[in-house]
Length: 601
Image 1 (cartoon, rainbow, N blue to C red):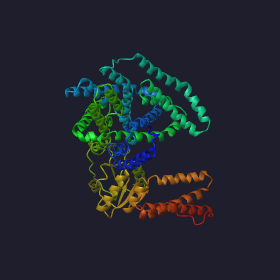
Image 2 (tube, rainbow, N blue to C red):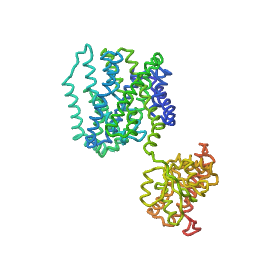
Image 3 (cartoon, rainbow, N blue to C red):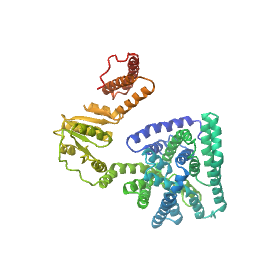
Image 4 (cartoon, rainbow, N blue to C red):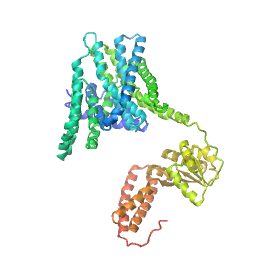
């Protein structure tokens, strides 16, 4: 019985959604990313966990469409000209990765005494990485357009192109299939790609214009999904990857006037199905097998990760990635991809893998997927700080002057403050943690010291014990709050003015008794005043309304401190604040001009 026709479909949907809502926010909060949350949720509700869901293969097959939709959206972001520019990286880096990984795994497997056919199948599977996990992780960490992101994408695209040769290789290995190279299959695949290109060039855009002209959004959404499903089905029918077909369709529409509308229509479906795909992968972990022979499965997964990282790291360096980028690039692609499930199942059907070994391979694949976010977290929290220290070995400057004011951070915020101070002859000790910024501002004649202003010993050297004012103009909001807290404890008499990035860290700073400047608040008020004048309000009225708003907002922020940990009271306060603001500004609009002019200064 089909999953959608199952009488307990809604019960299963409730289980999927409930597991997602419980696990994904938790792993995101822990800094592990959403992918691990989905995988753990799947392991918990699957047949080898709590046993709440049983149709693992059916759910996995259905949810693979989420990967297809993701590849279509990736294609929409990549114009054909940009894809052509990446051809060297795709075929050079991608081709080397697949060839070297397959060869290395084959050699290790043969050294361990595995039969030649099993060694080749293992090499084919391990050579693949998970498009879904890698692209989702890149998106979450906003690395899609970074150097590691481009390199990872090139490898993933080449792996999709390698699907057909690998499946043909399985046919050649099969003991009784008599398989070999099928020129008709290759011709059909090439014809399908050409057909997609011609359809996109001559027919697709007129069709989109006609459907969009009907003015029915639901029909446009239906056609968007039909387009992706149709192209994916065509590619599948000629033996190519559905994801590759969807990607090509997206590339053909990358410069279309309907690109953004297509993205908006498909994104929600992609998100839901991709989450379901990760859950299905988690459900496919045979925990009984892992527990029955944990050393074998864990050793296989660990060996896969080690081999791929050892190979990918020098490849990244070869293609001009710095060490700080090459290591996360290697970790990001170190898992085995979803194609391995298809490959191992086909190998089992052809008699190349027995049931036990196929199950062990699949369990190792999923464990390698689970390890990816953990490896990246290890890199970000343990290894990246070391690389940054090595990249900036410059010792902190010796601070040879002390002034009543210390400015911690000399970026765009701190520079404005210092320029005003300079104009009135007020001297300040400037401390900045970015050596490049230090060198740049010194060329413009500013005297600034290199050092980490969040460290109390650096502030002590700058004269914090005798200064009367510390201005925290650092970029990172968490660092600002942490530094303010430590300074308040060590130097309780030192006045602090701190740059706040948002309402939450502003509240944290206010609780510490710090004077707060919300960095975008003042400029937003200026923009609001200009907007009011453009809308026909007199300059005096516009300025008066903005001044009243500022008074009200600062009072509301201060009152909110009393209830910031009481969610219900805080919501009630915000609702009341909006009503009070409407009454306040309404009264201001009706007040005669010049009556009780506020003292803005």
